[in-house]
Length: 451
Image (cartoon, rainbow, N blue to C red; front, side):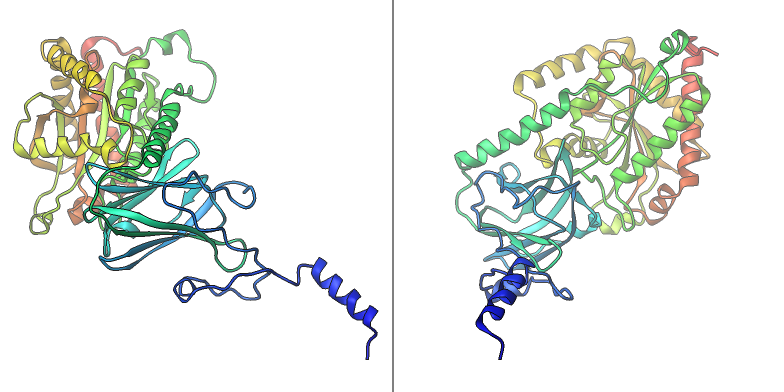
């Protein structure tokens, strides 16, 4: 038999090597979410449960690089619904509600989502659907669309198995009141302030040597790939709008740069959320001489999704050319609201209305119509057009008093053939080439191309 001293030495060695872990009992409800890992190393106690309106949760230890969010699940029913987000490490997070429409928001610091956007398309219980993605500098967002009024009963950040994995759980229950607490209002304001900080950042100059005097006199083209980040836009079977329009926007940027005749500015170059007013500001700050916003349309009605297809080019009008154009403009103009972003004040809206009224009497409106005609002419043969491809509506991003602007809906992502084409790199290059030729025509007529 070993001596008592020997046994004490062995016990101390095991403790120093991490062979003894402190743990807490796991409830039956929690245990269904715990992942099984081979040979798990000892784990520290899970993070304590926190209320839905508490300040951001501090992680147990600083992380290196973004934490990957690679899985999500919905469980429960209309009496209680749980959303669980699988994370590769601990995170800081904040939860609050927003009204009109009713939503629950989870802001998470230093997170990168690797889940497919379709993961949030189908709801369950009190959750109709949810979307996720980048929102503000250093912050990602999950926006949960709820079925009626809810309150956040609890949130938990739980150490989940081995290798530092965690799970963020959010429990929702029905509520009779839509009133927001002071903590929720403060959280929403902090989030808006973070977005405004990103808004205020100047557009970085393009890489490479500074432009020559001739290049500085070249026409400035602003390419605006719609949506981005937490704002996915329309969703198809195999792709999402934000990815398609960014791919076409980058192809158009390359085609324009290859001519050497233009200076190109992108409103976004990656999967980032850019508020609508920021897109207009980018155009104004760069004194753009042409603004092209790229989007992909979608139909909710399944009985029409396999019939309606084709591209459409829009210009600004206070009165929409038809009901479909009005509905589309309303949907695109609500992008910031659905993402829970900063909404313009009434004073700003009144100023925008004044600008719109003034714009209709200016030369800019005629230039926009001219480019729309040239783009339709050059794109025909390279792209399937809708039945009435030249339309107008009151799109917020087109409200620019000094810059000709168009919004191009590249097709219907809800139509199988349109979506297949829009996902094709070859098709994207053809469309970019056609738009580039239309831009050449537009500036050649005004004598502003420098060869």
